[in-house]
Image (tube, each protein chain N blue to C red):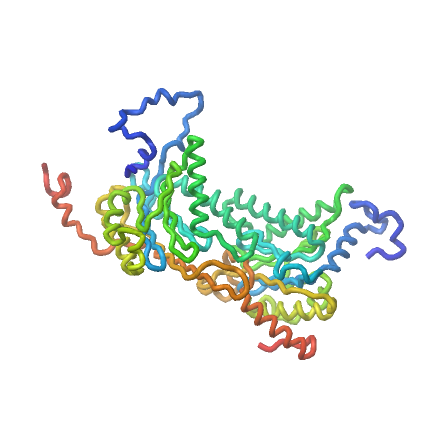
Length: 272
Length: 274
């Protein structure tokens, strides 16, 4: 972050301008905007991917379940965002056109790595011109494709995008990362990851924004039942998965376990 | 409807005389999509108590040549619907790949628990077909849309002219001549549907597929069958009753218990020389 000595030097006033020590302050400010957003995490499993978001609720008048933070981008890809909501909306709408253009061109769904690539390039272009500002969004892109199986990528305001076994962003990212590192990723199932994701979001919430109301939003990408069993052969399951909301009953159960583990003293591991 | 897709939608020569093609002269290039090239034959479907069964064989003909024998002419669209297509195969592929697949993907963006049901798919398709015929560039298909809608089974047909029609027993192409009378014996009207069991419906449709293979020279002894069953009405929210739609597939079904004895009596077939 810009130290007090670098603020006011003029190098943070325009996008695409380097400071003498080689930094782009506008990008760093955008990253700061993300750090205030609700925690978002992604978990890569052997048979799919789980995305979860701590959606902070600004008003009791909002309809429960509205203003979703995880978007379906194609049948097999979901994007969870943290940061400025309008920026996230535009980012996911771009991802949707990338996905549909890929289908038109190649007559097949877009691989997850190609989607991450395209969106990284798009975000990066917003660091290059004085007429625009970078995205105040870090996006976790999760999906399943035929060649690579489950894929999890995180694209930051700078345009950088890495592949992960477990990814976290937003205000509770430090606590969430510490918890993710304890999991034997990617060798857990989607069912296990749903419980862990709920617990981690609750844990991160407790750590960072205890006073605020929040809703847990959770989706997964996995093969439809039956086809997963046919395809499983030791390593990761492969195939075009389906991105959809985790069924309500499973979310309720995962939330119950998460609350239980919070009462049991914060950061201890959840039992099987 | 004629059983030759080439003749669909045209004035009948035996009634109106041959069409004077000089009226159609223009400086534009020939448009070969104005008549079907690779075609599929009948689609057969029947409602029963709690669902619909629909079947179509796996043949795509190039004129009278049995050119492709592994073509799937039934396709699931979304969660509630199966669309069966007769007529031009490339037009069918266009409908699915360029229109329906993107439509379903866009519909899932909302993620609100609602899905396009059979009647929505049907209305959309019939409007597309009618719009294309108004542009004098029809999609050369007859479609059967089978599925589940508002707690009831759904079955309706739409053709290249945008004609829409619903009945508890339907068939396209040659089947419109040969299969519909057989199906109506089982199911004369909508009221009869509740007395038809799933097994009876499947048996009736299988029988039709056999009769069509005997008599339709553009048919195949291998077909696909889809059985759509459902319970309840779609509703979203707390404590709402759950809707459940199941689509069961039987693919690469071979015709069973064929008997070609009757063919001995057909002039020009087998040993008979007259």
